[in-house]
Length: 256
Image (cartoon, rainbow, N blue to C red; front, top):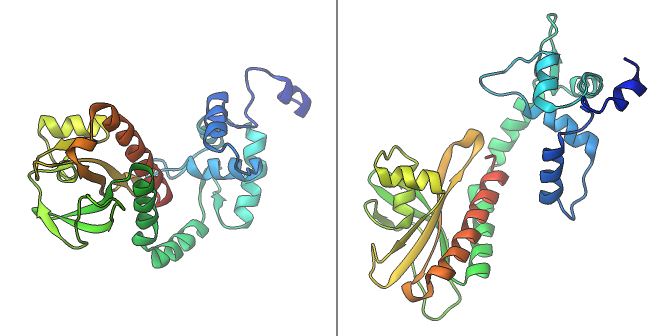
């Protein structure tokens, strides 16, 4: 098939992501500058996984939705810079460059530089104190926090250890570190947890999970404030803001 015929074939348009993916990318990247060739090349790299470290041209075509000619053209550039390699059997695999960059990223990674801006944005959007918790044994540790500017607010210090048997962040930490109770299954399905008066009768909290590379669970992002400010209507709004911020944080530190 000639290049002109390939582009004209309505059912096999593989020079760009499928229409659903394009629509999603358009919504997510509204107002952002985008370079389509770069995004196509990154889509090829994203096609590989732990379970499929080697892919044939046909498999890459299926996974990316691109024309084979598009993949071969981009693969040549990726190969020159060490991102991709094609072996003698025609299978593609990642080259050494992603590993080198991964080591650089790991050596320069500072979790606080990602979490603290997220906490600040949450406080600005919700008006409540925001905190990030991790689990250590049978306790949860407040690793980072950003206090609400309100005069009456929830106050907690960084480094404080709290119990794992109550509280929104504790429930989320349990749910994503082996908890097998029905409540934990519900939290995993819902993506967040709301608690009212579990640790303090006058406070309420909402928490959501944060993930890192390869969907590794890292910790719990949450907001806490006076219970009377967490009405049913307001709680829905706060939960939506929190979940969005948790997903953004997961994405920027390497999650999906």
